[in-house]
Length: 310
Length: 303
Image 1: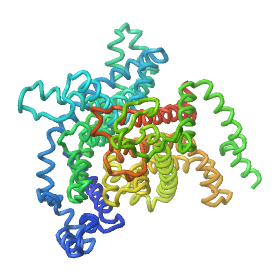
Image 2 (image 1 turned 90 degrees about the vertical axis):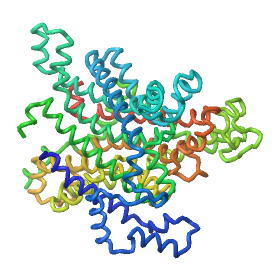
Image 3 (image 1 turned 180 degrees about the vertical axis):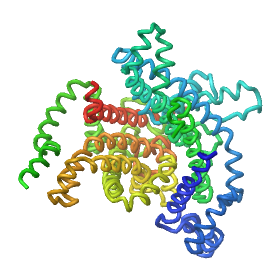
């Protein structure tokens, strides 16, 4: 609970930064939003409606009172509330984010452990080359190639679209998720595998690992119980940080697979210069990111009891 | 005074010439021992050649990045069109080669901007605790927003142009550099040879340039190489979403963005530009990893 309260100032700073970025960027947002063919009266109307004609400090105050009340303005384009829009789009984004992240952990951690265990052998090299490759692939390109191979050529999965959970067959739901989740998971998995390997290498050199082996413990127990647990902190950290990459990747992946998620909402808003929506989505995403990293901080205590007493 | 000067020399890192010669022979050894890094470097050199001579290499046999031919739309790869053609009959080969120029230019500019602003802000915050809080809180706030999303919104705010894309990606990537510079400055500042230098009356500028910055070169180069890779991916992503470089300038990202609707019938329109992105980023990462292994003293000891 205390930790949760500690995120309040962090969110205040994040909000301020977003406000500063949105309001101090050169150029008049009302003019940009209205487009090239707008009349001066239309621009003035937008400016008044958005409150851009008020002094900057008043705008700053209004901005925060809106956040606290959870009322994030309306889209200039559709007049829906930003919160409503985000809620409508949340399901596919959250589903893909979670499954993608889980997939990444399930691939990345064992791969990293294996690479560290078999350090400097061909197993290690193959895994690491794979990881460097995974980091180099642009997510949308990977997505396109997967679509082409598995949807267009093989016809195993639908090329685009998202089937909501409980709407239609479960198989359709699962099938529509496979390609986007693999796309998003691959890059994060590469990141995790690299971190796992280097963290494990460091731990495997420790004396207590030699002791554990000397006690005659099986290699699996040594690796998982003794080594991985001690190597976990940097790995968990990178999983948290990788979440930023995941959110960024989602924006692009949703575009590639035509999934109606929050990322699509943002891209559409960018194309339509719908500033309240852009601001709202960025704010919500940043909030999610901060909360997730809080969660990551809390797991430190589980892996390393010493952290708990701080 | 004389002894103090000697003491400073003894405690400070070896002088520049020594270091330079060492790093040259070190580089040769590093490349010999690390085939991955040599491969990465070759990829980068090749990409630079493509970028510099784009108008020659990309226009072989009368190919032209903007020439469209109504009868050659969505042609599959052939001897006439090595990478096929796009929806309005332009040569993908030629556009991709020309795209190299822009992608590398954007990435190089981003690296230059983030390095310089990162070094300035990092030094300020590390050296003068008065500004530390304000700047670092702002940087923390920026870091809480996923970088690509930040860049995307910034481009939306100021409008798509090459310069704006560079600035947007730089804003998103600078906080990381500031942190690294700041923490290094903080730890170097406390070391004895800095006290010694202060004792003989060296000015803050002299201390920074003679004693602090030389030690930052290693980590900065490594970080710079990763930022280069991130910048290429970000530019491709932004342009792909239509929030990047204006469409008349070919870039790897916008070639893919323009053609994504044809993707199911003409996979080559997206495949080749993406392949160039992937290979280039791979090259940079290999070089970055190699540099990290060589420049990070902690890792060197282990090897």
